[in-house]
Image 1 (tube, one colour):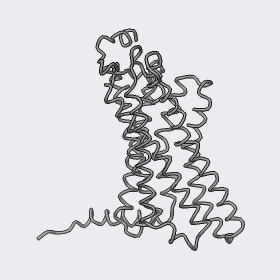
Image 2 (cartoon, one colour):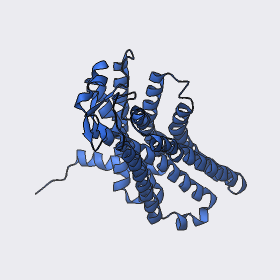
Image 3 (cartoon, rainbow, N blue to C red):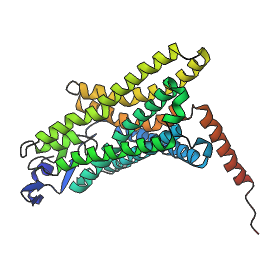
Image 4 (cartoon, one colour):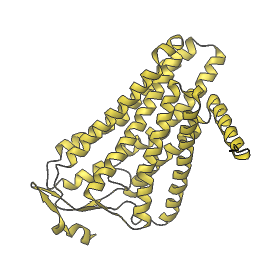
Length: 330
């Protein structure tokens, strides 16, 4: 990589800030048999694309699902679809076709979109947890507290907050000078590996603060809220509900908790133990953590819901009838 790091005569000097024309995403370089992993990622992306699109279409066309819970589910599917699309196609393009050079502006755009969708995915799990909390702990007041309007307001607030905090992180990157290496040791324009490249040339303290703040906002605070909400839910299940209602509620909670475990646990363990994990293992683990939840969310949470299955079967029957008996035009 000497040719990459030494070609700094091409850098732009904009108001004393040195911005390289490109970065190099080192990613999976040097890992044997990676072509099988790329095939695996492609399959995951296709399943995620089909599953989440199907869920969004069914919720959109079936008016019986136009309720607060399914507003949150629709947003979850939309976020999963965007998050997979922001990562997998670019990842495959870079490493399958040896296009690991990425321009400065494209790198910042890649950082922005990946982190916005990851952040919103975390916020969606909070929203679903809040929905379950109110439904189980305050069943008689659920339709007064959780309305379509309040759910839309909650969802929009999550998007606005996610965009703002990621914009701040990206904005702090733009003030840095990159006067040495341009090799990003990750599979995308990751925030930490990117700003640390400017350490010899710029004051990265604000970026370091943001690097500590982002995991708290995206990972630790949400998981604390979800754990606290489930403590209240468990208390309500064993003190208020009837046994048959308890079993039904626990099935829904189990699905949600599975999503929470799949999304949070691998990322949290990777961040907490990153000094003990080999770099390539860390990169593969984080890439899997990013692409697996969007594929599994529809299967685990939505397709196991009885009312959604009824709506999905009704939708598929309508589609099949249109295919078999097309409307005759005069």
